[in-house]
Image (cartoon, rainbow, N blue to C red; front, side, top):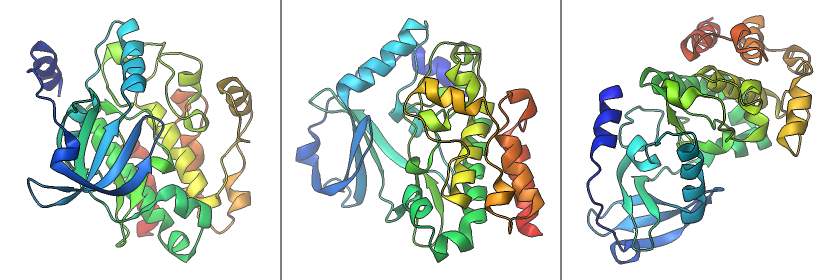
Length: 291
């Protein structure tokens, strides 16, 4: 991984720009995030139906500028995504730059539903598979951490569930290398209600910010509620997370003590009190699933 980063930064080949509308038939919009648009598209080169993700140029430039101000150069989302190979992570085939100077990614098309939708409807499918979904998502994060990445933006909207109940992590727009330079205080990007306290306070961070976001996500998956009252600003969020989270056992008395303990420990405000790694937390959930 470290060698990959060195190679990446030492020499970036000149990118040939692509007119995506000549190569791809845009069948329909399937998603839009704060920094990108995603189409279901047919690739004329392969005949495959793919997900074509195009990043917003100005917003991507502003994000890159934040890292530049910290004195670091972050790999692009496309460069990161091409390195990832895991059954619970969307597969990326190709990345590049459009003739409009926007970065694009060609990814596998997943015919599924957003995890945020399943959290909202809390249907029988969600209730039957919730623990399995948690474990699969945790396994994806465990893989990322082994590859020395920090995701930084885990939340239900960045996850899709296939018709056969396979969880896929689909967005890596804020992911950074787990190196000293990228762990330094300063960069406070992410989704406010899922951000760890040390990130909001602009303190030194590490992979335990993902443990916190993952615990918030699991809490929401089981309850349709966030552990704290939602806030509109980072300052209001910080006020809320300075108070104890809601009691998961009271909201879901049917859950085993092991599941409750695993999630509540992941929500600890002080990272030293949290699970030391994703593996430790997911192992606890796996143990409960087997039991």
